[in-house]
Length: 109
Image (cartoon, rainbow, N blue to C red; front, side, top):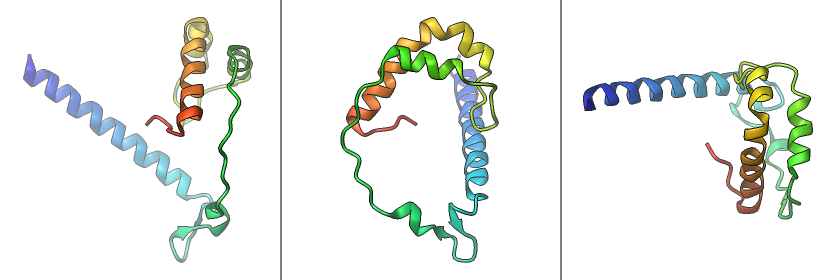
């Protein structure tokens, strides 16, 4: 039913917007990120650093990093158990996503 799909899609979009705003609000509370009086980014964060060459990450690297995750956080709500249980399936996908992102210079939203 199209009406139900549209309502569900709107609900998902509202939920995503809510969490994006929450993450931004938390990010902006860090003093090194914003100058609170001027509400402009800290100049240190704006210094141009050009990074142009990234070696590919291996599946073993991704497995090792996933195994060090202690628990989920408010900014990344995926429970550790989900990552642990799905690691065998997710590691190649995560590895490919990271390598494509580094090669293209585009971070997926």
